[in-house]
Length: 263
Image 1 (spheres, rainbow, N blue to C red):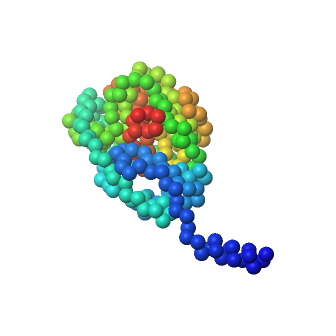
Image 2 (image 1 turned 45 degrees about the horizontal axis):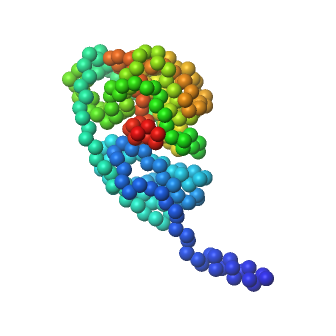
Image 3 (image 1 turned 45 degrees about the vertical axis):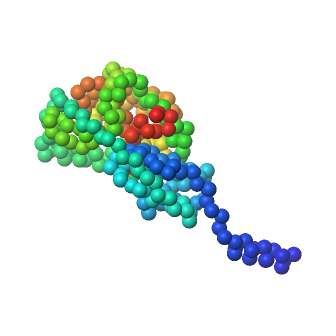
């Protein structure tokens, strides 16, 4: 019996490793979230960097607005190259914005840099929670007044592309959590973005809600999908009441319109 057991162990050790079962698209759009699945326990890297793999084999990563591709993904010994589909990015002209928010003086610019550094730090989180797994719902219902990725020109001055989606709604409209998560940032008076709230959905995925007139949750609080977390407004650099909904995979900005359940 002992000899048989030893022979069996030797056979298992010498057998070739089983190939990972992989579910992954062959192409992906600029600004999209990619949700993949593999055999639990596999090591996954994207562009050479490891990403979290859940106990159920799920993994996620984002494709940025300007990514040209292909994106190299390694799952165990399997290698994939995802083709990136380019998008046309229109130009949006926004007039009537207070000039001090478009080209702020040095002291205000320093304040903006400090505040943005806080927001960036709040995104640098990699929890094992899979709050994103049930898909997403709209945080508010209204007219889309600004789209992700479009080039923004404020008062005739070209600025960075729009980092999220603007939804025009009356001031005070309740904002609901698009997916469950944990609040990682909540401040009512950032210079550019006014009432600002970040909600972490796990695996480096987070939603941000800007220009809020009210924040109803606190840092560290866990919220469920559909729970009211604040109210839309026009605080910060805004010409009218609306909700700015942004979405990130760590520092990579993604298009909320391409999230599962939204499109």
